[in-house]
Image (cartoon, rainbow, N blue to C red; front, side, top):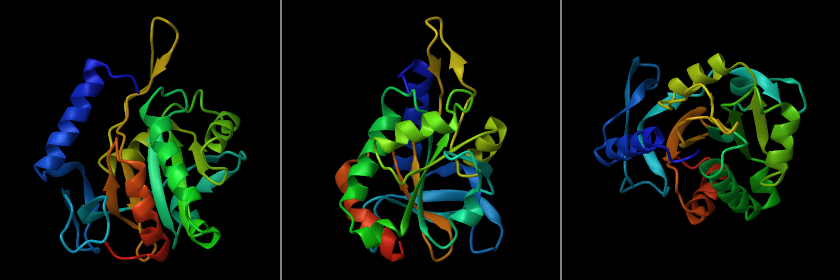
Length: 223
């Protein structure tokens, strides 16, 4: 995602919000007791995770798209009961998307075969017009051959992302023919016990953080 003044403002606003432990721009569910602003706290003293722990947890989006084999994929149903990392981005992104997915991929390779089977990594395209199933598969294979790629109706994608406090704007074609898709660069980790997001990873999170946290996610350790 190119660093335009607009994306810089978005990134800066997100950093300020997190540093101040302010509410994310979405509503989440708190154990079925209703919805409200989901707040984040940095490094809960009693948390084993190095990622940013959510004090209120997001429901997994009710999202149906197309996977890289061209088949329908129901995110909520097909990842139920399994630790899941969820990221929104696009394959022609020059920086944050390949960097983030590459770091996750490196950390995943350091898990045991048994641990890897317990963690889903899901990449949802914010540029579905260009990110066909084949394009997604080719791009993802360089990072993780078992990574799940989803593409389809952008309106559905935007709604799902918004429910998690993630901003996605319509792709813009630049004068040189390149495409910019402005999107939030957060990775959300859903735990298998309740299929809710408990941990947040910001853009720029180091690979070592994922390496530390992924075994915990695989075991379903509470945040």
